[in-house]
Length: 192
Image (tube, rainbow, N blue to C red; front, side, top):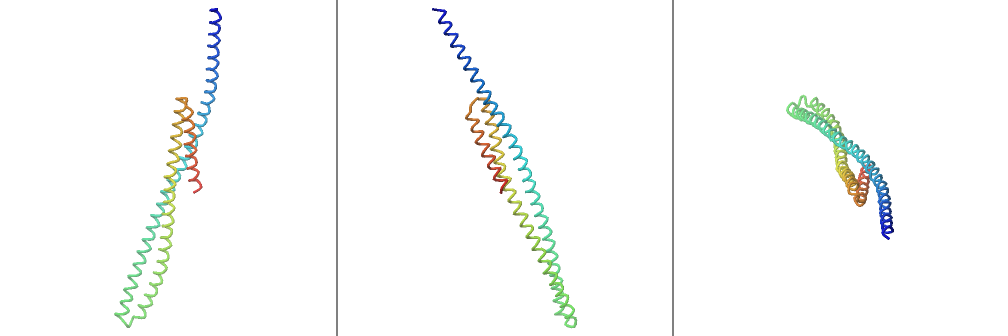
C-alpha cells in the first residue's frame, strides 16, 4: 500500500514538473515577444529622435533666416530714410533758392522714386522674414510634440523591461499601448 502511495506521489510530482516545463516554454515564447517588441520600440524611438533633431535644426535655421531678413529689411529702411532726408533737403533748397528750384525739384522726384523702390524691397524682405518666423514657430511646435512622442516611447521601453523582470503581462500591454500612442503622435507630426 505504501508503494502505491509513493507511486501516486511520484506521479503527481512528474505531472507538476511537466506543468512547470510547459509554463516555462510558454514564458520563453512570451519573453521572446517582449524582446522583439522592445527592439522594435527602441528602433522607432531612435527614428523619432532623429526626426526630432532634424526638426530642431530646421527651427534654428529658419529663425536665423528670419533674423537675417530682419537685418536686410532694417538696412533697406535705413537706406529709405537716407533718401527721404536727401529729398527733404532738396525740397527745402527749392524753396530757399527759387532760381534753382526746378533743378532741386527734379532731384526730389528722383529721390521719391528711389524711395518707393526701396520701400517695396523693404516690405518684400519683411514678408520673407514673417514667413520664416512662422515656419520657425511651426517647427518649434512640432519639436515639442515630438518630445512627447519620444517620452511615451522611452517609458514604453521601461515598462517592457519591467514586464520581463516581473513576468507580468500587464506591464507589457501597457508598454504596447504607450508605444502606440508615441507612434501616433510622431505620425501626426510627420503629416503636419
